[in-house]
Amino acid sequence: MNLILLVTVLVISFLVFTILIKIVQTTIKTAITIALIVLAVQFIFGIGPNGFLQVAFQAIQNIFQQSPSGQ
Image 1 (cartoon, rainbow, N blue to C red):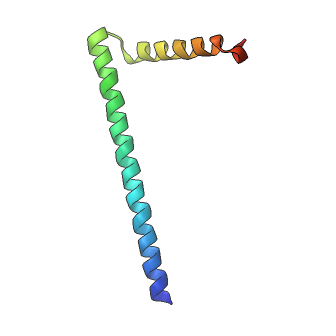
Image 2: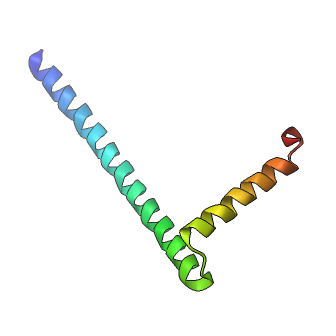
Image 3: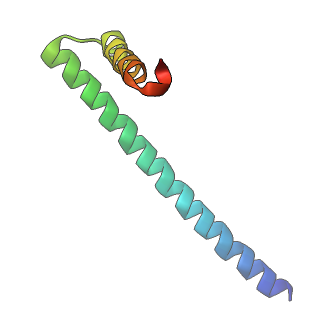
């Protein structure tokens, strides 16, 4: 009985660990991609991170102002 429980716990722990590793890898890849995009925009267009955020916030405000519920 204890051996079955131990094996089950080990298998579940292994599955949770591998899923967690995949999530962390995906998160790191996404963060690096976003950083590279921001750096490319900064070097090509001369827009820094603050300017990039201002443009993003303005776009979001425009979307909400144009929506019927935003009036």
